[in-house]
Length: 594
Image 1 (tube, rainbow, N blue to C red):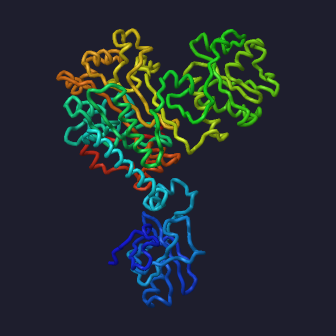
Image 2: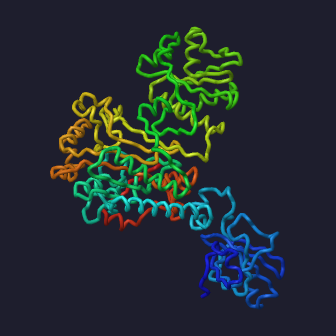
Image 3: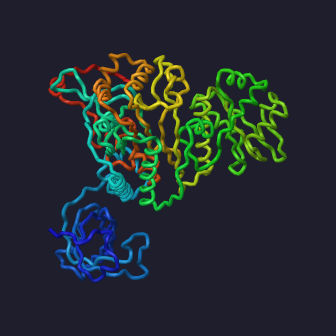
């Protein structure tokens, strides 16, 4: 076997004159009859090989003639400079070429089902042949960046006194969030483990056990509806700290993010990340994960609209909702009536009943069907508050607050993407704090935890939490990067009595607490330190660093949006014998829909 002496992408003009052995895959063949050029590829890059019949033994050149794309070969030869006119500045090895004198074929390849340099390969085909797809330089780059990020994170946390601890994959189901993935137990019939949605309980137990600072790059599982930035199994950068407050955790996490972005992208940070409250984020951006790379902020005109004669506006406000708008500036485009109708259809996705508009003419005159419902003074006040100028278009939504926020929050991002208002090379980081502690579930007729039931309430509401549960805020915080929630966490409840009060507000009986969290609740009897933590989505973080639109582009073997692995054909049916060992009987299910 000819063992390589260099990786394909490592050879440079410094190596000219050296005898080199390269191993890799044939990426391209150009045959000029007696003179054949090969590109040979490995994960480090590509090198051009020159196979000249007059310089090679007949037995060696005959091997060259048998080569096809994706054959795995070894090539030995002397490295030479390319002619100046043939230099390829697009690749790191573009100044040199290897003059081959010996070739060895490790293995042959059938014709592959798609060209690796085709940018328009159907994604399902890519996922079915993922082992071929992973040969593409862009995916290899993504996964190498992922590996580098993990090392940066480990080094940073190690330098700050954190201990890496692995927590169990097979645990107890605690259904208070997304659906669990369940694993039946063979040795304990009719019982199930749950795969971890996060290591939440275990990392808090490690704080009670006195480990002070823990971290883990952990695999997590959630059986939930999927989209571009979600997978049923994902990786979480999980950390927890004892004897800390909210600022301590946020400062540690912010330092880690700055370390990653500075070492990977070369970004410089001169100040702390911006921090805004959940309420401010919703009021200004209609989202708790605001993209702050552009304007189009929401403007509340409820106080003006409540005195109008438009019934749907007045009714929305009287029922606890609001009337808000975004100002689309004239510099974007002149929105036609058809454009606006398209935007009306867009907000209906978010349950808005409609979208009104106000166009501002060149001389400041108003063109809107709303004019007959507002006095000149009221309309003037709206334009002033929206900072409207000639050519601007104001898009107005009235409804319940959650509908208004969801509709206008999504609309501002939609418009910014459509009209190129976002600088794709820019990164905007911010903290969102003071999230609601509870939210009321109309379906279950009870309050639920916005984050999880171990999140500590803000001190302001602690004394009267039961009576102020509808407005109470939590010591919870998210870090948002370019409109994506990159991580989130909270200060945890460490006082047993406070934890019991929160469980009662959530409607959990003593039996519920014992069955779901018995071991966890018991641990708090034996002295728990003040503690808090945070978890980052590693996959989403790499997606942001690499500026790709799908999380599947940064995971080696992802699932489809139907949670299927097209390559291995999982999930799949299993033998009846395996089911019998687990005491499982299957039901016939036809046309199942969630």
